[in-house]
Image 1 (cartoon, rainbow, N blue to C red):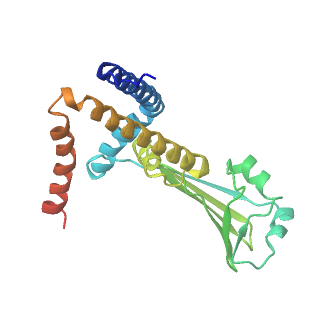
Image 2 (cartoon, rainbow, N blue to C red; image 1 turned 180 degrees about the vertical axis):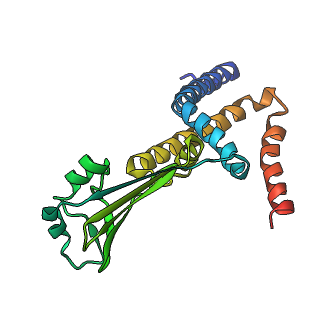
Length: 215
Protein backbone atom coordinates (compact mmCIF):
# COMPACT_ATOMS: atom_id res chain seq x y z
CA UNK A 1 0.00 0.00 0.00
CA UNK A 2 1.59 3.30 -1.10
CA UNK A 3 2.31 6.10 1.36
CA UNK A 4 1.09 9.61 0.71
CA UNK A 5 3.89 11.86 -0.42
CA UNK A 6 3.96 15.54 0.46
CA UNK A 7 4.93 17.70 -2.46
CA UNK A 8 6.33 21.12 -1.43
CA UNK A 9 5.23 22.57 -4.74
CA UNK A 10 1.60 21.54 -4.08
CA UNK A 11 1.73 23.00 -0.57
CA UNK A 12 3.08 26.27 -1.93
CA UNK A 13 0.34 26.34 -4.54
CA UNK A 14 -2.39 25.81 -1.92
CA UNK A 15 -0.86 28.49 0.29
CA UNK A 16 -0.77 30.93 -2.63
CA UNK A 17 -4.39 30.14 -3.49
CA UNK A 18 -5.50 30.70 0.11
CA UNK A 19 -3.55 33.95 0.25
CA UNK A 20 -5.07 35.12 -3.03
CA UNK A 21 -8.54 34.22 -1.76
CA UNK A 22 -8.08 36.19 1.46
CA UNK A 23 -6.66 39.17 -0.41
CA UNK A 24 -9.61 39.15 -2.80
CA UNK A 25 -12.05 39.09 0.13
CA UNK A 26 -10.19 41.87 1.95
CA UNK A 27 -10.07 44.06 -1.17
CA UNK A 28 -13.78 43.40 -1.74
CA UNK A 29 -14.77 44.61 1.76
CA UNK A 30 -12.19 47.40 1.67
CA UNK A 31 -13.69 48.98 -1.43
CA UNK A 32 -17.27 48.50 -0.20
CA UNK A 33 -16.50 50.21 3.12
CA UNK A 34 -14.55 52.96 1.34
CA UNK A 35 -17.50 53.62 -0.98
CA UNK A 36 -19.89 53.81 2.00
CA UNK A 37 -17.52 56.12 3.90
CA UNK A 38 -16.39 58.37 1.05
CA UNK A 39 -18.77 61.33 1.36
CA UNK A 40 -18.94 60.99 5.14
CA UNK A 41 -15.14 61.07 5.37
CA UNK A 42 -15.03 64.20 3.23
CA UNK A 43 -17.65 65.85 5.46
CA UNK A 44 -15.95 64.88 8.71
CA UNK A 45 -12.50 65.83 7.37
CA UNK A 46 -13.60 69.30 6.29
CA UNK A 47 -15.58 69.93 9.48
CA UNK A 48 -12.64 68.66 11.52
CA UNK A 49 -10.64 71.58 10.08
CA UNK A 50 -13.45 74.10 10.59
CA UNK A 51 -13.97 72.94 14.18
CA UNK A 52 -10.24 73.19 14.87
CA UNK A 53 -10.29 76.78 13.60
CA UNK A 54 -13.75 77.79 14.83
CA UNK A 55 -12.38 80.93 16.52
CA UNK A 56 -10.83 82.07 13.22
CA UNK A 57 -14.00 81.65 11.15
CA UNK A 58 -16.23 84.66 11.54
CA UNK A 59 -19.91 83.90 12.04
CA UNK A 60 -22.71 86.41 11.63
CA UNK A 61 -25.78 85.02 13.36
CA UNK A 62 -29.09 85.91 11.76
CA UNK A 63 -31.79 86.43 14.38
CA UNK A 64 -35.46 86.25 13.43
CA UNK A 65 -38.16 87.27 15.91
CA UNK A 66 -41.91 86.80 15.62
CA UNK A 67 -44.85 87.54 17.87
CA UNK A 68 -48.46 86.39 17.86
CA UNK A 69 -51.53 86.33 20.05
CA UNK A 70 -52.92 83.01 21.20
CA UNK A 71 -56.69 82.69 20.59
CA UNK A 72 -58.80 82.62 23.75
CA UNK A 73 -60.03 79.08 23.10
CA UNK A 74 -56.43 77.83 22.98
CA UNK A 75 -55.32 79.83 26.01
CA UNK A 76 -57.49 77.61 28.20
CA UNK A 77 -55.43 74.58 27.16
CA UNK A 78 -52.52 76.00 29.17
CA UNK A 79 -54.34 75.59 32.48
CA UNK A 80 -52.21 72.84 33.99
CA UNK A 81 -49.65 72.48 36.77
CA UNK A 82 -46.65 70.56 35.52
CA UNK A 83 -42.94 71.34 35.62
CA UNK A 84 -42.24 69.81 32.21
CA UNK A 85 -44.66 68.49 29.61
CA UNK A 86 -45.26 68.79 25.86
CA UNK A 87 -47.48 71.58 24.62
CA UNK A 88 -51.15 70.55 24.31
CA UNK A 89 -51.95 68.74 21.07
CA UNK A 90 -54.67 71.29 20.24
CA UNK A 91 -52.10 74.09 20.31
CA UNK A 92 -49.54 72.51 17.99
CA UNK A 93 -51.38 72.96 14.63
CA UNK A 94 -51.88 76.66 15.42
CA UNK A 95 -48.15 77.08 16.08
CA UNK A 96 -47.32 75.33 12.80
CA UNK A 97 -49.72 77.51 10.80
CA UNK A 98 -48.99 80.82 12.53
CA UNK A 99 -45.27 80.69 13.34
CA UNK A 100 -44.03 77.66 11.34
CA UNK A 101 -42.98 76.01 14.62
CA UNK A 102 -43.05 72.24 14.99
CA UNK A 103 -43.51 71.53 18.70
CA UNK A 104 -44.41 67.83 18.37
CA UNK A 105 -42.58 65.56 20.79
CA UNK A 106 -40.75 68.39 22.55
CA UNK A 107 -40.82 68.99 26.29
CA UNK A 108 -41.77 72.50 27.42
CA UNK A 109 -40.91 74.12 30.75
CA UNK A 110 -43.99 75.24 32.66
CA UNK A 111 -44.00 77.94 35.33
CA UNK A 112 -46.76 79.99 36.95
CA UNK A 113 -46.33 82.84 34.47
CA UNK A 114 -45.25 81.28 31.20
CA UNK A 115 -44.56 78.23 29.11
CA UNK A 116 -41.05 78.10 27.64
CA UNK A 117 -40.22 75.73 24.80
CA UNK A 118 -36.53 75.31 23.87
CA UNK A 119 -36.02 74.43 20.21
CA UNK A 120 -32.32 73.62 19.78
CA UNK A 121 -31.20 72.85 16.24
CA UNK A 122 -27.92 72.24 14.39
CA UNK A 123 -26.29 75.46 13.28
CA UNK A 124 -28.42 77.66 15.47
CA UNK A 125 -31.00 77.86 18.20
CA UNK A 126 -34.64 78.76 18.74
CA UNK A 127 -37.14 79.16 21.55
CA UNK A 128 -40.82 79.87 22.08
CA UNK A 129 -42.42 81.61 25.05
CA UNK A 130 -46.15 81.85 25.83
CA UNK A 131 -47.51 84.15 28.52
CA UNK A 132 -50.09 82.08 30.39
CA UNK A 133 -52.12 85.12 31.47
CA UNK A 134 -52.30 87.20 28.29
CA UNK A 135 -51.63 84.59 25.61
CA UNK A 136 -48.80 86.65 24.09
CA UNK A 137 -46.48 84.42 22.08
CA UNK A 138 -42.83 85.19 21.36
CA UNK A 139 -40.64 83.17 19.02
CA UNK A 140 -36.95 83.67 18.27
CA UNK A 141 -34.78 81.74 15.84
CA UNK A 142 -31.02 82.15 15.43
CA UNK A 143 -29.15 80.89 12.37
CA UNK A 144 -25.33 80.84 12.63
CA UNK A 145 -24.69 79.79 9.03
CA UNK A 146 -23.64 76.70 7.08
CA UNK A 147 -20.25 76.29 8.74
CA UNK A 148 -21.89 76.11 12.17
CA UNK A 149 -24.53 73.76 10.78
CA UNK A 150 -21.92 71.35 9.38
CA UNK A 151 -19.88 71.58 12.60
CA UNK A 152 -22.93 70.53 14.60
CA UNK A 153 -23.48 67.60 12.23
CA UNK A 154 -19.88 66.57 12.96
CA UNK A 155 -20.55 66.67 16.72
CA UNK A 156 -24.03 65.15 16.47
CA UNK A 157 -25.34 68.19 18.36
CA UNK A 158 -29.13 68.61 18.31
CA UNK A 159 -29.36 66.40 15.22
CA UNK A 160 -31.93 63.81 16.29
CA UNK A 161 -32.03 60.03 16.35
CA UNK A 162 -31.67 59.38 12.60
CA UNK A 163 -28.40 61.29 12.35
CA UNK A 164 -27.01 59.57 15.48
CA UNK A 165 -27.75 56.23 13.82
CA UNK A 166 -25.95 57.43 10.69
CA UNK A 167 -22.87 58.35 12.75
CA UNK A 168 -22.86 54.88 14.36
CA UNK A 169 -23.17 53.11 10.99
CA UNK A 170 -20.56 55.42 9.45
CA UNK A 171 -18.17 54.70 12.35
CA UNK A 172 -18.64 50.94 11.87
CA UNK A 173 -17.91 51.30 8.13
CA UNK A 174 -14.78 53.36 8.92
CA UNK A 175 -13.67 50.65 11.34
CA UNK A 176 -14.09 48.02 8.63
CA UNK A 177 -12.22 50.22 6.15
CA UNK A 178 -9.32 50.65 8.60
CA UNK A 179 -9.08 47.00 9.67
CA UNK A 180 -9.24 45.63 6.12
CA UNK A 181 -6.65 48.21 5.10
CA UNK A 182 -4.39 47.06 7.94
CA UNK A 183 -4.71 43.42 6.88
CA UNK A 184 -4.03 44.32 3.24
CA UNK A 185 -0.88 46.13 4.39
CA UNK A 186 0.13 42.99 6.28
CA UNK A 187 -0.15 40.89 3.13
CA UNK A 188 1.89 43.37 1.07
CA UNK A 189 4.44 44.27 3.76
CA UNK A 190 6.87 41.55 2.63
CA UNK A 191 7.40 43.30 -0.71
CA UNK A 192 7.24 46.84 0.72
CA UNK A 193 9.76 47.25 3.56
CA UNK A 194 8.58 50.78 4.39
CA UNK A 195 5.06 49.59 5.29
CA UNK A 196 5.40 49.10 9.04
CA UNK A 197 7.75 52.06 9.67
CA UNK A 198 5.19 54.36 8.01
CA UNK A 199 2.33 52.77 9.98
CA UNK A 200 4.42 53.20 13.13
CA UNK A 201 4.87 56.91 12.40
CA UNK A 202 1.09 57.26 12.34
CA UNK A 203 1.06 55.99 15.93
CA UNK A 204 4.24 57.59 17.29
CA UNK A 205 3.68 61.16 16.04
CA UNK A 206 0.24 61.66 17.70
CA UNK A 207 1.50 59.93 20.87
CA UNK A 208 4.50 62.29 21.08
CA UNK A 209 2.29 65.34 20.51
CA UNK A 210 0.02 64.24 23.37
CA UNK A 211 2.91 63.50 25.73
CA UNK A 212 4.94 66.63 24.95
CA UNK A 213 2.40 69.36 24.25
CA UNK A 214 -0.92 68.45 25.89
CA UNK A 215 -0.97 68.93 29.66
